[in-house]
Length: 297
Image (cartoon, rainbow, N blue to C red; front, side, top):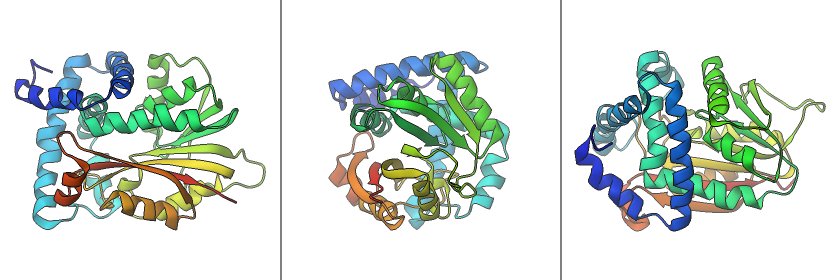
């Protein structure tokens, strides 16, 4: 990164310095995964670094200006996000590459991943069936597949292109166990008495892209066995060109999960690099909000 954006080194050094030893160990594993994934990208690691700077300066910064001025996200509908972002393949390739790098460089992303790896996965009962909705880059599937508690690991996505990218990532990451990837819209999928249910569902940075996250969580709940849990990661006050639902705080994230019919089993809040949680709340800075919901019946 020093070659492509030397001015950013202060931020990266601060981000690493603010992490605990346990979080740094998970970050090192994630960094190795990203390095492996760079082999399937034209331009490799150099392109990832360029796209990360593009993410920060050309993608996020204009959205941040709008958020600071108006207190809202610029877009409010999935149709707008589809027109401006998802239908633009070259833009999306750079956007996704930049987000992949953020899992290493942004402290709140690193802490969210570590919470999943070090706290959530070890809390699952033996022989759990795990599902991720919107698996994207495959990093959460990678850690789920390594969990000794997992009997099966599956991923759903609404996009054939995304499913194919996830499948390629699984191959590159060297996941040894079978991972079932399915083209599935959770809003259109209902258990029919014959379909397999799950013990744990992961939704990381998915709900902020939706107009009605409560409806999606309610449908996901139907795919959980009684006693099953959902692990939700959403960013509060995090403007981006395809973020349309604004989570205002960690408490708001809990309210949304509760409204979908879950009891709250645990929650965590991880502020952006360089900010305390108190400062992030006061200044409406980005906070990664983790909520574990529990299906009681």
